[in-house]
Structures are given as structure tokens and as C-alpha cells.
Length: 351
Image (tube, rainbow, N blue to C red; front, top):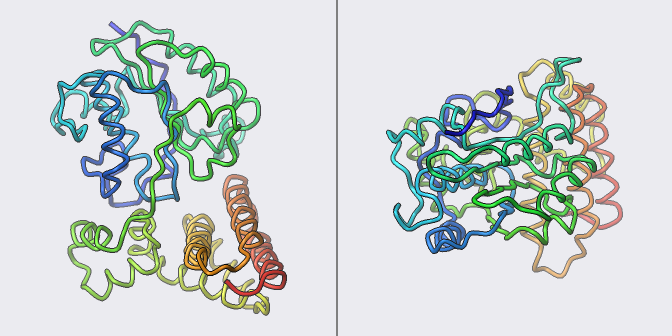
């Protein structure tokens, strides 16, 4: 019988209020190719030691990771279960995973700093070192242990080096699932030791079908607007549908459109409003980076030089992640975003 890993508070930064968390989600929207590739490897008994699941936020990376985890914990690397890696909601494994209590599953995320009571800015080496004890435990009835690192690009240098040592000497009957929004931040040696499952933004038909299922009270016009604004991210669309999401997304578009001539007074007033909203700065950062990413993708085949805009997108991701984690003044972050966008527009033209 496996010993249960010590209980650690998991901060659900990826939960959209009113909807199932990825560990509770039975439906994986889209990503049939990635799911089929994972299923083939597992059901043939030859899964890799680690998968790196990549793609923009909110498109289903964690949902896929939990789906793989449930199957391995229920059936191991065998063909005993369904070829879509589904596990019934009422099964003991699914119920334990949904409750965050399965002894064979370890989830590592940025946690709460016990000294400050605030969310840590990085995934620390102390968290990654928990893998050694977890993988060293006696296997449970299913014989497999699975660890999900979400998101792996939150690791600091010490944490990344600790993970690399584990990947160099992988334990048997164990699986690492690394979820990453920006895989380029990971050490090349970590990327080379993982098989990659690259997820793409969801297509319009899939988005429309999922929004119809999840938002039964929304009319066709509202769903169409959400599909356009979310850029293939179901998580982002659900955030947009609640609270003041639509206003934040419109402000993000406005900031990009007026990159060379921002209205500083209006931005300061908007930043003050963000400070009074729950998760306002974090949500605005998600909408802004998603809107910019969508414009970059739209111009990717036009021959335009986009390196400055890609660098701006990366800078915005870092800035909003840091500001959210440290609870910095939204005014500083919003004005900094305007400067980053303005510099890119002056050097590379509009996007």
C-alpha cells in the first residue's frame, strides 16, 4: 500500500469560477491528435518518462495531463482501458483525483509563501525536491505514480536543475507531466528529455460547441463574440463570459491599437479600476497577451518582421506574472505594458 504524500495547499490559479477544474473535467475539447499519440504510447506499454504539454493558456493542457494521469493510475501502461484514455467519473480513481487525494498523484504548482501568506513568484526547488520522496514511495495497487508540474515554466534555476537530475535517472513505473505555456523558458536539456505534446488553440467550431454546452443561457451573438475575443482559448472565453471580462478584453485591444499614442490619464484610471477588481490585473494580462498573440499569428505568413512583437509578448507575460505574484501596483504594470507595446510599434510597425 502506498503512503500518502504530505498534504500541501494547492492554489487553483487555473480555476474559472463556476466551472469544473481541469482535474474534475471529464471532457477534453479538441486536441484529438495529441490525445491519440499519448494513448498509443501508453496502451502499447511504451510511454516516455516525461511528456511536455505545451500551448497557450486555457486551451486544455492541464485537462489532458489529468486525463493521462487518471488512465495510468487506473490501468497502468496497458490496453485495458478505452482508447481515448477516459476513466468513468464514478470510478474510485477519478473521484480521488477530482478530490486531490489520490496517493499516486502529486501536483506541483506555485504555492503560498508561509512567511508572507502570498502566492510565490516561482516554483521553488523545495517543491521539485518533493518528487524524489514521492517517486521513492512504494507503488499503489495500480503500480504507477504520476506527477504533474503546472506550470513548468514557473521553475527557478535551482528547481530546473533539480528536475533535470531526476530526468537523468528516471524511476520505473513513473510519469512526469510538464505543463508549459512558454516552453522556451525551460532548459534545453529538460526539453530534450521529454516527448512533446504541442496543443494548438481550439478551432471556431470546437469553441462554439463547447460554449453552447457550458453557457446554455448565452445567445448565438454572445458566443460568436466570445469565440472571436478568446483566440481559441476556452478558459479565456469562460473568463470573458463572467464579470467584467468583455470590458477588459476591449481595453486590451484598445491598448494595442493605440500603442504609439496611449492615453496616459485613461490608462491610470483603468489601472485604478483593476486594483478594485478581484484578479483584475491577472485577467487583464491574460486578455492582453492573448490578443497580441492572436495578431502575431494572423500576420505570421505575411512576410512582416514579427521578432519585436514576439519579444514584446514575452516581456508582457513576464511582467504581468511578476506583478500578479508580488501584488504590485497595477498602474506601474499597465503603464509598463503601454511602453512595451509602444516601443514595438515604433520599431516594427503595427501588428
